[in-house]
Image (cartoon, rainbow, N blue to C red):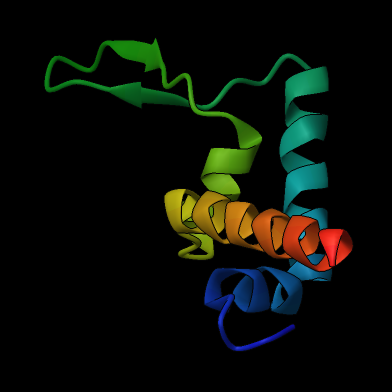
Length: 83
């Protein structure tokens, strides 16, 4: 992966570890176990964060930059294809 796509380089490097953690989070969900957050009154609330976003936060992947890189790749592919 070219250095011009650093978030994709990071994403590729964490592939198997990310899959293992993602699989575990999905398994928790299938078992009805939900990740929650609490306030200062010890009331618990569903955090509403997707597995993808949890993984991005854990591995410090900037999803906005990742999307920009994808768009750059697609643009390059279109230009290369037309020539």
